[in-house]
Amino acid sequence: MTKISTPEGVSDQAANIVAHVVSEKPNAVLGLATGSTPTGLYQRLVARNVDLSRVTTFNLDEYVGLDPSHPQSYHYFMWHHLFAPAGMRSEQVHFPGPHYEQCIAQAGGIDLQILGIGTNGHIAFNEPGSPLDSRTRTVSLSAQTIRDNARFFNHIDEVPGSAVTMGIATILDARKILLLATGKGKAPAVNAALKGPVTPQLPASALQNHPDVSVLLDYDAAALYT
Ligand code: PGA
Image (cartoon, rainbow, N blue to C red; front, top):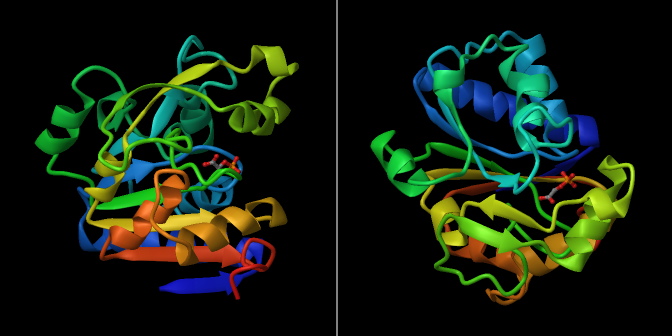
């Protein structure tokens, strides 16, 4: 299913999908993403008081070398945008580290994985060239990703060079995937991911191998796809 709307529409529909999953299964296991794209979704979950008190969450990735208290760490992002305002507890939430794959399996696997996409077609920090059968591991960030993420830091030299990320195979294990993309910078990657060949050079293309992916795009991100 692919839907195209305004950026607000993307966030509204994403919130509807997450709220629906959690109402059907209050103890759902959610895979969560950081970045500009999902912030509207998290705002809406908080504003609508969606009950997240029984969910378990697994974030896609985290920088290496940033303390969880660092404002650009993904720990900080998630506590600021979702976990604290939604009243969630630290026992509910997980970030990549040792035994992450076993931890996800013990939780019963991910019911719904939220995903963004990089301008280079990455999903999580699986950069171009990542094996399609990759699992959680430490990776080097591509020059493109470092440039893209420099906007969040005072200087590009402050962007960490490496991260721990779920792998492409980890992501594809989720029972349902929700891919969000907004902005014209994403249009080439979105088009290649949805219509191009499945290739490690465009990690998001691996989503074509998953049976249940919903794609929510704004008009700009969909510009080359339609
Ligand atoms: P963004 O990042 O939402 O900040 O554009 C998406 C991504 O890199 O996966």
